[in-house]
Length: 314
Image 1 (cartoon, rainbow, N blue to C red):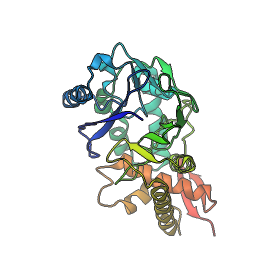
Image 2: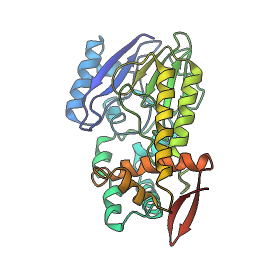
Image 3: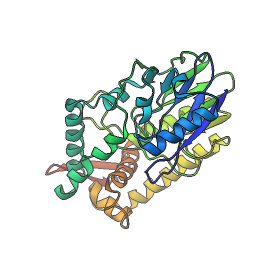
């Protein structure tokens, strides 16, 4: 692939995010960083470094809807904006969708046994919405679709880290633009998010994520251009290591379930030092391990006074 990496600053703990300018029958930008002035200047400089101006970009394609990737779509008013259909809800930010999103989280947090005093703090994401773009998608990308302007570049739907997540595989070079599916130094967090059908049925994000990693593994990619950090070449070994680490952690969680516990109780034990500051993230991690244990038939779940309790199956 004729690709140019643009490293963009973010205000998030993850640090810089990568955008990629792909040359072909049309000039396409993959991901656009969060909507801050510092990021805008870095994006403009990166495109100029590649020999182009902002208005030369004909397509902006989003790997997923998270604000560190989907902010500056607004800087390309003449370009086509493409991504998974789910992204469009976050671009439009209609009152109906925001209300649904908030109610989804309130319901899930109560099922997890989270005290009411924490719930609204987790639910409110006004700052993150301000980092997102507001330009609706002009086209939805389907699983298995070839990308216009780039013959042989195929999209694969890979949910888990995000319900909207796509990767893009070039069948000629066997290289791929991978978003946050697999990162060099950190594990991608399978975040709890509302489902793509906008129901109240929570997706099992870690289970989805492992399935998506297996898709990536089966593709035998030669090089993965990642959303954060460096490019990856030893991909399949890293996938195996990450999945094994998750399974090992899940077994540690299983050991804590000699008596029934809810998600909040487990999170306080597993992440005692950080859960108050990173409650949404740590709850997502705990739920992921429990979903994995449920998936392999290792736990039973009971609904007691509106809260889900997990215990070991003996």
